[in-house]
Length: 140
Image (tube, rainbow, N blue to C red):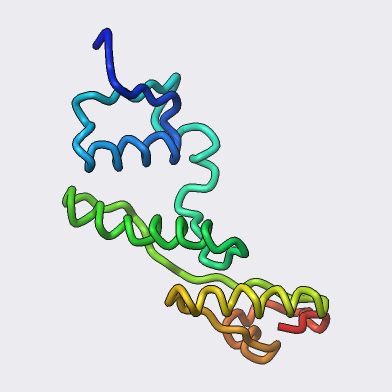
């Protein structure tokens, strides 16, 4: 084990491992150490592995999520290993008028970033997910 490093990262969750990855790509790899008390990504990161939604209200966080999503195929190409990632989409429900307004604001933001999204009504929701039985209170 080393006695010195320019950067010491505490924690091997998504943030720590991600930081190590990016520092290595910037040439800091030999001067960087990651310390983890257990196994990599075994803490709270494990519970939400691969959960990187695009539908997020903050512009900067939407950019972070977009970058994270683009990293999965890049890392697979770089390493030759499968990350097991598959983007499957999601449904978010708007119940109130305020929800609908917020969905429209987020949708416009995602459009500016070039992220595919669509606001749909009940019929399309039922088509996409036939198991949804009682969605009469859903507006979009």
